[in-house]
Amino acid sequence: MSLQGKNVLLDKLKQLKEKLAARSDSKIKIGYQLVDVGDFESVEKAVMGAIDQLGNVDVLINNAGLALGAPSPFNDLTHAQIMTMNNTNINGYMYMTYAVLNKAMLRKKAGTILNVTSITGLEVPPFPGEAVYHANKACQEAFTNAIRNELKGTDIRVLALRPGCVATNFHSQRVGHNKEMYDSFFEGFEPLVAPDIARAAVFMLEQPLNVSIKALDVVPSAQRSITVFDRKWNERR
Image 1 (cartoon, rainbow, N blue to C red):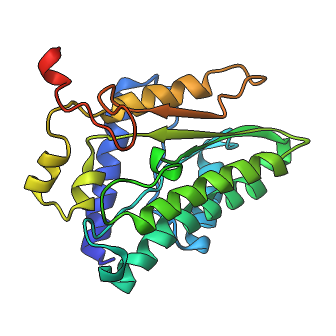
Image 2: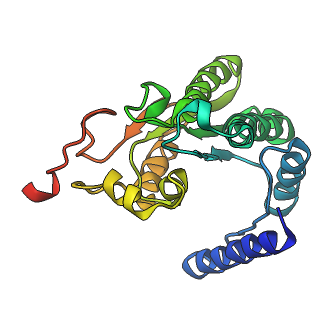
């Protein structure tokens, strides 16, 4: 990433921190760091920095997600697109989890790891261009289940939150910022927005420590299944 690109991202993070600080109790500490989740040294450094700045890590939300090249089939993707998705969606999850476990949670044998996966981790999407992304999300599901078992003997919960269609920059980037394709994807129904996912995450995290919502699907009501969209949902409301 260019220096200019890093400065743009840092400026966005700074603005987000200021926005959150204005809405929060003055006693709440808010920090930010620019991290390449596909680079383990960068991840480990960021985790250690967060611990130094904010204290022990009690909750980790793994939300790295990237889909590129849709609707191109797998054989038309570039090598760079494949590697970038794998590095972000798989290595990013594993590196962050590894660093947080070893630098924080395992010291107290307590905490919660919330992995934001996708409903596409369980079913193949009905449209082209999803081979790598679907495989990545299936891997995240398997990783979540395996880590949960391996952490037996601790008070560390491992949860999976599976969003359906959400109106964020993710889908815009997924189709190469093609507005026509983006609009047609959501035609006839109202997708979820970021606060919907946040509420679901908070619901899972606020459960007593002896309660685990192991997995939660959160989708638009119009998304009857991964393949069936009720595209007249808005007309009946």
